Every structure is written in structure tokens, then in C-alpha cells.
Length: 330
Ligand code: G3P
Ligand code: CA
Image 1 (cartoon, rainbow, N blue to C red):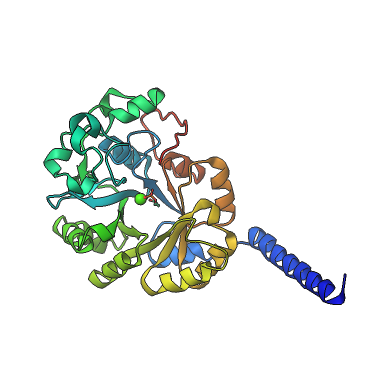
Image 2: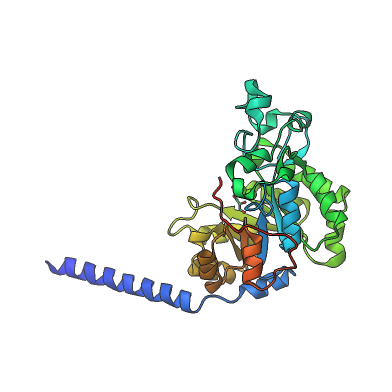
């Protein structure tokens, strides 16, 4: 081995030791700034966000899943918003209808089409609950048969009528397909009085999520008070890219939401140093929760809000049995 190789290996070894020491230090002493950052926005710490409702217990994005999340006392209900062919804002995650409805039976000729090619009247003919009974017989309920798609307005009205403390977390799904969906959504929130509620109590009852920078910038320009969170998936977060994301997000967002396994403590602390909070998704298992609470994630996006609320001793009185069995979904 020549001297150059020796120096190279020694330098590499020193770098590896320094990174490991920093990594271990970050685990032992994670950033505690998140609470302060969330308190500055009057947000609960840590935030508990029911992903598509309590979707481990009832068909995702349907009335029963939303009602369960409200009963459990989640801080927010997360919904994916898209638009029908005739311009209605609806709550639905997937691009097409095959996984979550009986579209193949009712509209065999257009079953492969995307949801934006259906009118609301057509979508109302579909059953969005029976798939769940078939896939998870232990959790099945007659109540889930023939559940209807919800307009965003329906959920807002339902939540207003219940005068709940739970807020809404709106994700614009495929916003590039839906010109001006941001403006349409803000108009709806204004029309229904949802934004007034936020101003009256001074507690944000609305979070806006998006993978799209453009969407978040549009929301900032429409209503700068709204809390905006940039979603990042695992492909977007590579070694070295985190700094760029935090710099970018700092321009137009208040926080980031990232997959649980890239919620590294050094990511969280560098985001905190910029004043950004970090939520983790989708956290459905106790071991994930233990690690993430250790490294001080600022919020949990979960199909199982009951798991997180009970972990943080915030479980409100639940009047019904939840099976707790974990389901895997797209
Ligand atoms: O909350 C993050 C999450 O909603 C983004 O992923 O696919 O579940 O909408 P997805
Ligand atoms: Ca979503």
C-alpha cells in the first residue's frame, strides 16, 4: 500500500468516525426546538393527523373513517382533494377508481379511466365501502356497504356540525391536472366559514399539504396565513438533498412531511434550525412511534390515530371497539 492510499483510507476513516459520532449524538440529544416552532403557530405538539380518516378501521376517505378519527380526537383529518369532470371538489386518494370501488361492475367500459373523467352523479352510483369488507372480514361492518364518495364540502359541513376541535388537513392530489384547484378550495373554505373559525379561535384548523411547490406557492399567494407543508417522498430525499429541500421549503412552507424512515434526527434538527417543523408519515406501528418520538418528530400522519393518541396519553373516551389489527394499503 503506497502513502497516497494510506492517507486516503485514513481520511475516509476519520470522516466515517465523525459522521457516526454526529449520528449517535443526534439520536442521544435530538433537537427540542419543534415544540417551540409549533407553539409559535399555535399548533399542537406533537400533531396527530388521521391519514384518510381512521383508515385502519374503516374504508378510507369515507364518513365512518372520518367519524372514528373525530371520536378518537385526532388533531387533524387528512384528505386528498381532486375534482370531478363537472367541477366538484371530492375526497379521493387514487388516480383511478378500481382499488376502492365497484367501478368495473357499474361502468365496465370506462373502468380504467381516471376519476376526473367521471361526473359527480356517476361517482355517486359507486360503492366505496364493500371492498373493505371483502379485504378485511375481521373489520367488516354492514354500515360500510355502499358508502358514497364525499365532496369536500360534505366533510366540512359534517365537521362544523359536530363543532369539533379536530382540524382539516387538505392535500392537493395531482394538482397539475386540476387548474386553479387551490383557488377553488380556498373559495369553498371561505364560503363554508371554515377559515373564519380559524381566525376566531386563533388556532389553525387547516393544514395544507402538497408534493407540489407550485401548489403551495399558490396557496401562499391566496392566503398567506394558511399553514403549508411540503410533502417529500423517499425518492426525493437523498443523501445531500435535505439541505436543498429545507432551503426551498423555507421560501413558501412552514414545515415538511417526510416518510418515517427518512425522518433522521439530523434532518429534523437542520429543519428546526431553519424554523421548519417535520411531520412523519405514515406511522402505523409502535416501534416506529417509539423511534420517532425519541428523535422528536413534530407530528405523526397515521392510519391509526388511536395508537398515537394513546401513546401520548391523549386518547379521548372511545365508545366503540377498535380491532387494532394492522392493514397494509396503497
Ligand atoms: O400525509 C402524507 C401522505 O398523505 C402522502 O401520501 O399517498 O398517502 O397521499 P399519500
Ligand atoms: Ca394524502
